[in-house]
Image 1 (cartoon, rainbow, N blue to C red):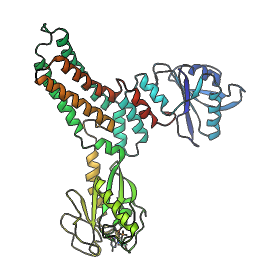
Image 2 (tube, rainbow, N blue to C red):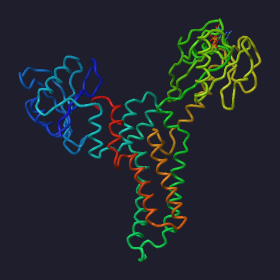
Image 3 (cartoon, helix red, strand yellow):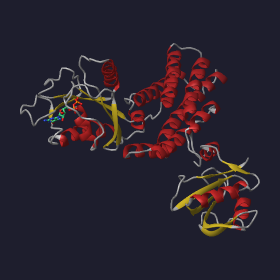
Image 4 (tube, protein in one colour):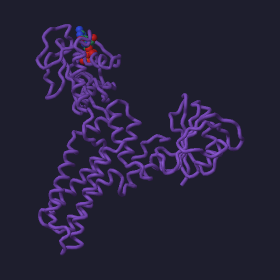
Amino acid sequence: METIYALSSAAGRAGIAVLRLSGPHVRRAVAALTGRGPGRPRAAELRRLSDPETGAALDRGLLLFFEAPHSFTGEDVAEFHVHGGRAVVAAVLAALAKIEGLRAAAPGEFTRRAFEAGKLDLTEVEGLADLIDAETEAQRAQALRQMEGALGSLYEGWRARLMKALAYAEAEIDFPDEEVPGDLIEKLGPEIAALAAEIAAHLNDGGKGERLRDGVEVAIVGPPNAGKSSLLNRLAKRDAAIVSGEAGTTRDVLEVRLDIGGVPVTLADTAGLREAGGEIEREGVRRALAMAEAADLRIVVAAPDAGGDFALARGDDIRVFNKLDLAGEVPAGAIGVSALTGAGLERLEAALQDRIGAAFEAREHPVITRARHREGLRDCMVSLDRAGEALGRGLDAELVAEDLRLAARALGRITGRVDVEDLLDVIFRDFCIGK
Ligand code: GDP
């Protein structure tokens, strides 16, 4: 096994930079850089770093050593906390490259080693990746939970129950004449049904976890000149869209990123929905319609001078009646605002917060955060249902056992317990170097 190293903190000028090493040659590398091997594990020591070949001083910094297997990767790990200047980092990296048996780490390689050492399961690995990518509070909370094993232990718990059911079925196969398993149907039927119900409930989560990772799409739609761009600017609290009095100025879909109650939201202003004149505008309208269709939530805007009704609005769309400063009467069920004066804006923001922030509040149960999990769970359900059916029809225990085995394997692939070699490159590809 090679020893790997990387800059684990962000590249660029900073107060401190952290360089990390992992592998069997860590002790030797520490000695080569600082004159002696690591001291007590998990205790910070101030060391002078020098070039292993020329002896030239590079920097002074902290050394932290974690002895195998009590480290992130399960191998010997050392961290150097040096001054975060570009030249310092470059010099230390160059010095590390000179030490035999060391090489620069590939993206995600530290975490991959942690997975291979059994320190993290795949859902925890994904949680870690999400934690690094988290931009909002709700994303952070969801990622932390997953990194700490909430999802993994849910799936491993189900898998353990499946393995137990499988053991019963196998006992029936191996000792058909003995009393060991008793009545297979009586024993397994309720358990298979219970597992299937729990997994089905877990699958039926409205895709919240995935949406929180990706961000929620909100589209602002309405006739030209209703004040959609003005409203977007108000909500974004900056001039993101060009506002003009001439109908049909917002020709394309314009997006801003917002943080609503800890949830990342992409707010899209769309071209006015009307009979379009020019070709570019027609394309804008086409995109607007597609965007509005795909959005998780729509804000439908009407205004007294641009179409005062909500003909476009459907079911749970948020209805906004803009230009309150021009007309008094707000249609029933709509929120009256003025993008010009800012009147009513808090009510609109509160409505968005209600609809989006509240929907993603941390719940008791961990949620599915990736299509990969969903696919695994669906595969598991298919096999479970088949096992239940075979059992119900009084079929051979071997058929039941085979389906239970497949169901368990589908769960095992989610956590990475079984044959996942093919998945690993895809999962670790998205990591940054040094992680
Ligand atoms: P869009 O075509 O729906 O994106 O509408 P714009 O945001 O470009 O606004 C169209 C026109 O209405 C512009 O002249 C705005 O200044 C004006 N406008 C927008 N909101 C208000 C408002 O609340 N009150 C008034 N009086 N004018 C507004």
